[in-house]
Image (cartoon, rainbow, N blue to C red; front, top):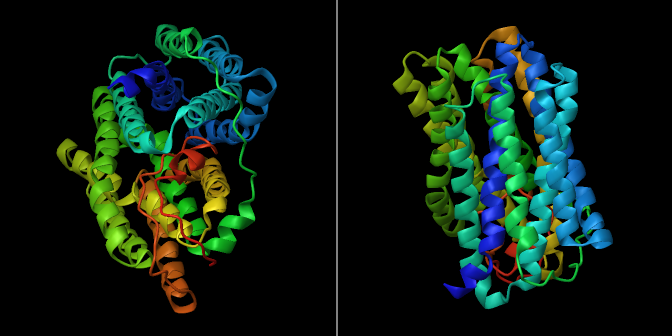
Length: 410
């Protein structure tokens, strides 16, 4: 208990940050609808967020090294708050896209600071307990952020102010803690080629994971409006999706540790395609839409973590942090393209096109997985399955000790 209390300021900052930045995506989508933005412009906002996220992942370790953890956290939080407050002062989709770059920068930068702080303070024996608590708080904050949409009015100055206040409040726990600021940890090099060298299938899977998660989180409210959900129902719709994904982690982890992970990815893709088919063809009635959201989250959420575990099977201990950063790099690339592409398809073919796009991605992953089973090989000694958050390049160092030390090549 004393150990968790030591990290309580960081955890509280994570919770407040998640409430703020986790709410802006669906609020922007609903606000865009209220302001008569085109479907493509709403999709652009989601893609812009991940442009900022990618920049933040790359830049944050360098800024921490220059000014320290607390000052870097303050700078990234300020960027996020400015982006939120500015929304209703300049009502233009392209100006909002720049503001969403700021929100993505805030998310990546703040998580990099928090995870860098944790990494510097954690001993190996403590890592599992603290990381488990960290993931629960992060997921809980994400769930709460979706429920906030039910009472935040779209395109309203007060709504964006509430999110900005929460973003600013995240400053207090971390900047006022009496704990000594840790030394700057060594940052992993960004080597995207390492991920492909260790596992081409893992690279393909994390891109498809972005296709599912980034699209649903950013474009889900638009789909909800198209199928007749009210604002409070859209909040529940997004929350059920996240809850379904959280519930999938234990069975996915058990399967990934017991069977060939390539087969697990293939069968997850089969399940994802079936859930997409169901969602695209049965959108009549609120109950059915909610069940579809839960099933979609259950079948798509584990893809990233299973792919990461498969890639780490072929990595040496010294490569683990850089491999995690490389996988997150490919996830960010997929997440940048996915929301805008999905919005264009919805504009052309209707709301079911969102799930059709995801289904095509999983069909490609299934085919590539079958090909890799013919030309690749499986490790008999494997790393543990770890539920891997997609937060910053530093997360790989935090999770490294949770995996077995195995050497190998792809």
